[in-house]
Image (spheres, rainbow, N blue to C red):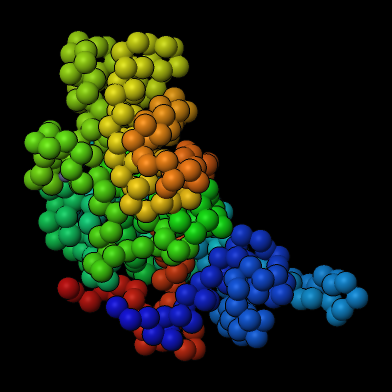
Length: 411
Ligand SMILES: [Zn+2]
């Protein structure tokens, strides 16, 4: 896809807003320095964002001997954004103001067998309605809802193309959701949501080449290359969880065998535990979350089985991450997702060692591996920033005809 001048203008507008969110209040001069755009371009874009009510003038600051500089800030009360993290084991919705500060939350557990699309859709809609109600926001002030679902998605069509752990094929998710919700809807997956959250608010801020590895039931990598989210030609880049780690290895939901996910995803870690210690009390046969949490507690208590399971998992993960290091030479790898959050520092330490054993020295020399530092849920935060991006692309004087936002026409 070619980038048109309109795309570039939308991206610049988004870039300016991103810096205002990060550094509010801020002058146009500071924005020009931070974005690398000319002062005239920044002044123009700020004018547009003021016109849209996304920004407000908040006063002046003295500049050394020069004229006082006008300061702008995000107009937090202009509207609300909602981000929903739909995972195989839970649904988590958050409502944000325009500074991306959380104003309300709603959670629901999902059992693995409760994966009928109609049921999942009803529960997403209920979670969204709940946060809108809790925050006391009028429906027409919700600028957009970003929904992240596992697997591959067609974001333009609003379709979940393939969710291997649910066996979903071509589920028209946004059309189904639009039957329940009146808001503009945006779809993507957790790999890209996590990556955008890290770029805006987390470890990848100011880093050009970063890989955000999502460890949950599924496994994948979000790629920020050259400072930009890399989507690939069909929004499918980063399906590293389904690259082959073990030839003829464990069967995977995707139809392949020996995928990274089969060793580093929660069900894969459970299988490793079962193989090492079939009768371990750490094993909760029906509960991924309960088992990973038990492993986390076991690590803290020095339980030898837990230590062994995490060591084995880190060796698999380290080998697969070394491929990413050799292939992409990233500045940063972020371990994100609920499994990484639960196993925390002990997993990180083992992973760093395992990567060092496998990766080539030169590409690895400048690669830092860290845990996700975002204190709240990075997926719902990232999903909300997609909604913000969508609302920016769909409004404004020059962009009326180019809305990528899903408008509710049947697909
Ligand atoms: Zn697979």
